[in-house]
Amino acid sequence: MRFKTAYFGLFALAALIAAPPALEHLSARTGADAIKLSGFVAHAQDRRHDDDDWPERDTFDQNYQLAPGASVRVSGINGTVTIETANTQTAEVHVVRTARTRSDLEYHRVLVEQTASGLYIHGESEHNSDEWRNREVRQRVTLRLPRQIELQASGINGRTTVGEVDGPVRLSGINGKVDVAQARGYSDISGINGTLTITITQLGERGVHVSGVNGGVELRFAEALNADLHVTGINGSVYTDVPNVVVQGRVNRSNFNAQIGTGGAPINISGINGHVRLAPRS
Image (cartoon, rainbow, N blue to C red; front, side, top):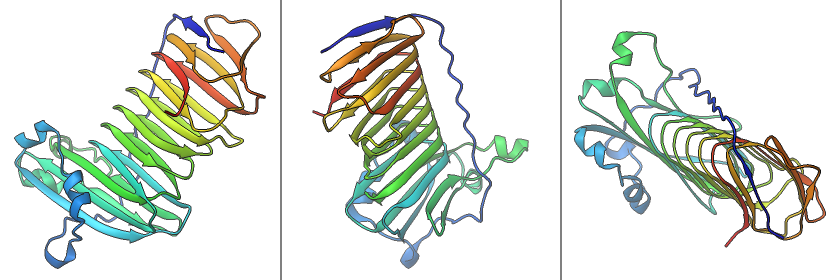
C-alpha cells in the first residue's frame, strides 16, 4: 500500500557544529615517511574547482590497523569527507589542505589519533584570536576503512559520502549533502543542511532516528521491513514505497503514525524541510 501525506508549517533547523579539544598535531609527511595509497589517493585528489585558486597545499597519508567493530569518529572538518569501505582491517587516512599562502597552512590542522577503541580524526580546535580567524584553510578528508566499524561524523562543513558500513552510523551537524551506501543496526542522523540518502540493510531494535534535516530524506531498506513509523513536523510530503503500511490514528499537520509489516523497531522522523521517502533498496 502506498500513501502520501502533506504537511505545511513552520520549520526551524538548529545544528550545533563543534570541534573537540585539540591534540598534538600530525603534520604533513614527505619522503619515506609518507604512505602512498595508489589509486585510493588518486581518487581522493579529485578536488573542487575552487581549490585550484588556492596554490598552497599539504597532504597527510597514513595507515592504521583496526580491530573488527572499532569506533571511527570524524569531526570539525572544513570541507568534504569521503569514506570508502572494504573487507580489510587497515584504515587508510588521506588529508589534503589548501590555502592562499604557505603561512596559512600553519593553522587549522587536521589531527589523527589512534585510541584503544579505534580512530579519531578531527580539525584543530579554534583559537579565540584574530590571527587564527583570519587564516582560511580548506580541508578534504578521504578515508578507506574496514566495513565492520561503528561510524560517527559531526561538524562537517561539506558534502559527506559514506560507503557500506556493517555497523551503526551516527551523523550530526553536517553542512552539505549526505549519502550513506549502507548502515546496519541503529542509525541516528540530525542537523543536516542538505539532502539525505541512506540504505539500512538490517533494522536493529533501536531503529532509525532522523531529525532536523533541511532537505529531502530518502531511507532505503534492503530487507522486508517490520517497523513502527512516527513522523512529526514535516514541511513536505511523506511517501512509502514499501508494502503493508497501515495508518494509525489521525493524520494532521503535526503527527503521523503507521505500522509497517507486523511493526517492530521505531523509525522516528521529525523536523524535515522537504519530502520524505521510504523505499526498498534498488
